Every structure is written in structure tokens, then in C-alpha cells.
Figure 1 (tube, rainbow, N blue to C red):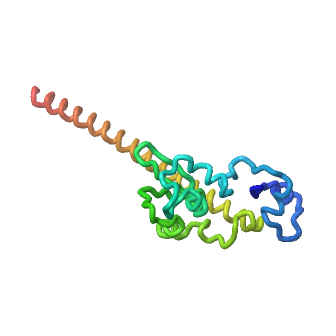
Figure 2: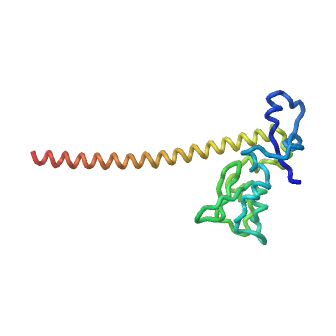
Figure 3: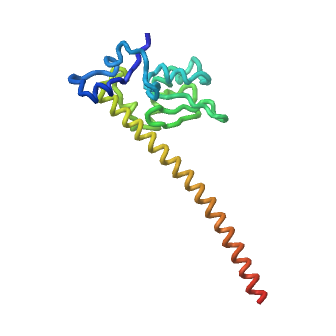
Length: 181
């Protein structure tokens, strides 16, 4: 039976119900489900995203090893091997059969909180899990802010180009008017 991490401990925490250190797994016993939005913390769920992964066997970057390293598969039209860490959101592509997913993750995102884990997510204490969740949320917000800034800069450049075009037309019209008088 696959281990599942249920975070009903929010209720326990809000009522002061945790007097001793508890693990996510011990709090999940007998519940059998994972709240929406937390599925990717489970390796099995990350592994299920690799249905079209190009590296199946006889290589280092199998779907199982990719999921073990914290990656989910997010293929795009021109790149079928795009993988993204579910914690730091680092995207990597151009995988080679002999690439080690954990080493590549460490090389490209050395400060990822997932890499700092020294135990299975289901064995984390509630406090450790909450710190990991906080890092994930911080990284998600940072990624969204960068994306919004990029989009705003593109829009600002478009508007700047339109303004420059209008100024040029106005200047040309003014020069023609001035030269005719």
C-alpha cells in the first residue's frame, strides 16, 4: 500500500493538539487521501507525470529516478524531456541517457530545499514539512513575480514603440506644416 501524507494536522495545530513531535506519516495513518494541491509531495504522484518520458530503461534518468529527485514531467511541443522540480520550480531539458537526475538537480539548483532533505517526505516532522511547504510557496511566488515582470516589460516596450511611432508621425507632420508656411 503506498504511503500517503494527509495534512489534517492543520486542524490539530489550530487546536493546539500536537504536544509531541509528529511525522506527516503518523498523522496520515488511516486517512487514505491527500488534500488537493499536496499530491506532488508524494513520489508516486510525481512519477505518474512521466507517462511520455523518452528515457525508459538502460539509462540513468529513468522516470523513477527523475521523480525520486523531485522532478515532474512537463513536456512542451519542441522538447519532450522538460522536467521541473516541484519545490524550486527549476526546469531542465536536454537530458542525456547518462545524466543523473539528483546530480543535475544539485548542479542547476544547489539551494533547493528538496535536495536538503535527509529523509523521505512521509517521515518529516510537521515542522519540517511546513518549512518545506513555505520554501515551495516562496519559490512559486518568486517565479510568478518574474513572469509578471517579464510580461509587463514586453507590454511596456510595445507601448513605448507605439508612442515613438506617434511622436515620429507628429514630428513629420509638424515639419511639413512648418516648411509649407
